[in-house]
Length: 296
Image 1 (spheres, rainbow, N blue to C red):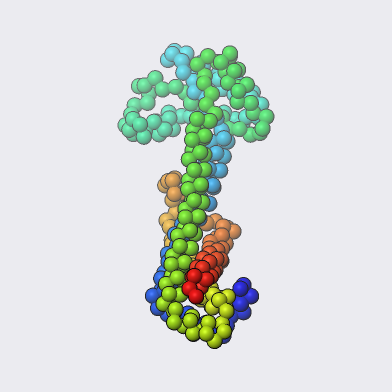
Image 2: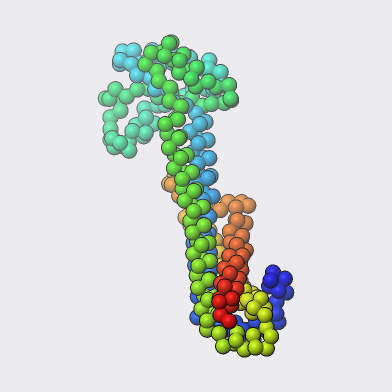
């Protein structure tokens, strides 16, 4: 059947399957709509993977040390902690966050007018990680022994739920693609059955003159596979254009940052029309052979 599908029939299939009609419109529209949705589901699945990698890399690239002490000892404890961090293997140069940066971090909770100087806010030190030699647990124990009040935060509590959420979104994207394929197969099957039922008289005449069921089925399969591929190609192009027109969320740092296709990722949606054609072929072939076998 694949050979007949690829060779074509020189228009003879139009005598069995009309090239126009509500079944043709239904197949084209459903394939296009599902392909359009598949583009966005695929973009979501790819973007969440990048998002998980980016969040994990950003949070794993540095650690934060919080120094809490009475006001009279705060400066001395902070300097002692800085000296320890400067001699930590695998770590870069520690940086004490100035008061304006600390106020910026607290602004979402306390507002921009909060007087940081009037509150017992601990000192925050940002420590970049330069190599694999960095031992977070060893540094945590050293701080407990040599710098009381200094607490190491390696962002594990932040990183784990963020990465987990992104992975779940990726799974949802894959599930959405599978549901879209199943819905497309169902609609194409219904359209093929409707076309077979509408052309029952033609099919009976073809059988009288010696046409085999596989020949009749091939005509339907060819027509509906072509319609599924054409509709999916149009929906894919529209979906890719919609993705390209999405606003750039990087300056805002929003959750949609990175949603879309990048580099070679733009080739991934081009597989959607091919998959739609395969789905159309399998669904129509099953429907045609089943109906032809039931109607004698």
